[in-house]
Length: 236
Image (cartoon, rainbow, N blue to C red; front, side):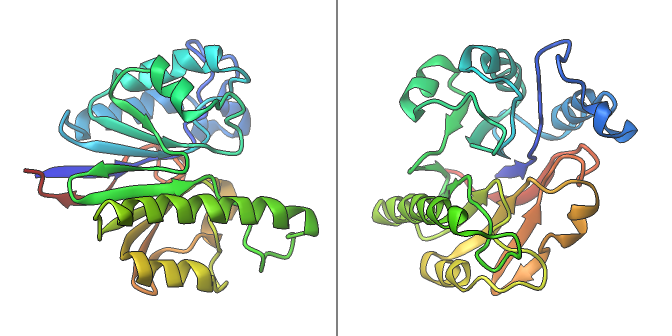
């Protein structure tokens, strides 16, 4: 048996941090120490941790590599997608060549964990959002295409159980999101994992069972800086 955990928005910036996160509130003081402590108490080498974006404040990959190597040294396998602050992001192939084997990146692809495929992309605002503009439409369609490509690749390879992971929540409480609902039915999405929301916005996140999909906000401050168990699976 192996477990899948998740936590987002690590917002690392080197050691010691070049951008201490407690400028956003005292609850962020020593946030990485809290996350690392929870991770090491909870996660084993056989487990997997999903990291849906905003990993590092670095502007360039060489800077982010310090943060990625520290993450890689923690127990378990790590699966990462891009967040809106991950300006250091390069092509999947270039990044994969530079990091330890315990880290995998998703970009128009998926990562298998036993018989479950972890799929996803950064995501964008829901077109129903009051702040959605014509400029957002192009980005939304591109991200939607990447999500579809990720899920389709997994299904083509025979996977029938999926976890969908985005950085942005693709919808908020009280909003409908028919295309995600249809994806859930088509691809048998068990869990939807996302981050991005902090502070007062945490209360806007969809939670619990929604059209057959279990929704999880995993921004680290929403989890009190502890990894969250998503599911357990049997691995041969």
